[in-house]
Image (cartoon, rainbow, N blue to C red):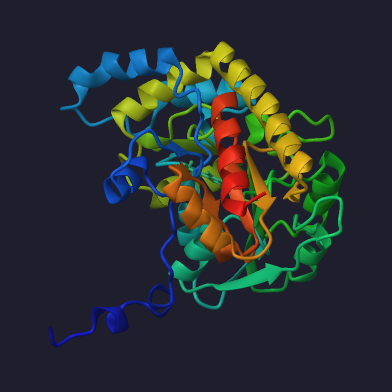
Amino acid sequence: MTCDYIELALPGVRQLTPYQPGKPIEELERELGITGSVKLASNENPLGPSLRAMDAARGVIEGISFYPDGNGFALKAALATHTGSTPSQITLGNGSNELLELVARAWLAPGREAIFSEYAFAVYPIVTQAVGATARVARANPADHAMPHGHDLDAITDLINADTRVIFVANPNNPTGTWLTRDALEAFLDRVPESVIVVLDEAYFEYVEEDAYPNGMAWVGRYPNLIVTRTFSKIYGLAGLRIGYSVSSPQVADVLNRVRQPFNTSLIAQAAALAALGDREHVAESVRVNREGLVQLVAGCEARGWGHIPSVGNFLCIDVGANAGGIYQALLREGVIVRPVGNYGLPNYLRVTVGTSKQNERVLAALAKVRGA
Ligand SMILES: *Cc1c(COP(=O)(O)O)cnc(C)c1O
């Protein structure tokens, strides 16, 4: 090999660190020669997908020799009703991650800037850097704040300048699980110039039950620079199918649709997502299991004197003191996969996805065992 293909790549790409996904169960079991492990590392739904979504997926399987509907007519119509918008405001993505990437491709470039918070979702820096734009990282709330490590919207607005094109805000945020109130976000949206795109990432929207937690869809008509993203990967239990969506002004949706691949969401994903959206019982049951599971995990931490970041998502960051990496490895040997978040700047924490009551019990017991507590 006479060429260095890394050297030949775009400057932003050269410096990228690939996204680190949660370890797949099959990989762990292959490596350790064990069975019966549990994965609570990627915020997947422990109840699995809706039965109606699986039936719908099976129902379209014979049609996979055809391209999917590139405009996603049926799914967009249902999402428009679901979100109180129109199909022209909706963009479908191969997971909501793809929508984040489309935003970067459409509005960011070298010389342009994106703002996001410290401890924010890892995909924001990746998509920003991949297109050579500059990332401005806003200081997060301090550790002794009511929302420790959460977004500080004032710190974000302080970083806005003439080169700012995009702001990424996660509500609630992953991995911290912290959230922003309706009043705080509305005041923020009022302050951001219309020329700056605000991406409000609501991947965990369906889980949140706080009264002061806002529905971003209610603002899309008022703020033409706002893009609200949601996903079928979390509460709907369809992470393996890769489908998410955004709602924005029609003109912003038009831009996103110019840069997306014509068939970015599959036939099976569209059919399953449509059915999942209609299965209100599955969503309600998932919310209930998550609410009880969070209480169980928090109680387990408090009983043992472990710190944690208060979360409204389907995950909890547990403070394991020093050496979270070693504890993560020891948990793997117990057949329990969680997520280290040192790459987020939270080296003392492990992020645990809320599982079934049995799974939560298992992770707490395993953690107690490996910590010798
Ligand atoms: C999981 C997650 C997503 C998106 O995941 P997709 O599977 O690509 O839809 C987006 N934002 C946050 C904050 C997440 O945690």
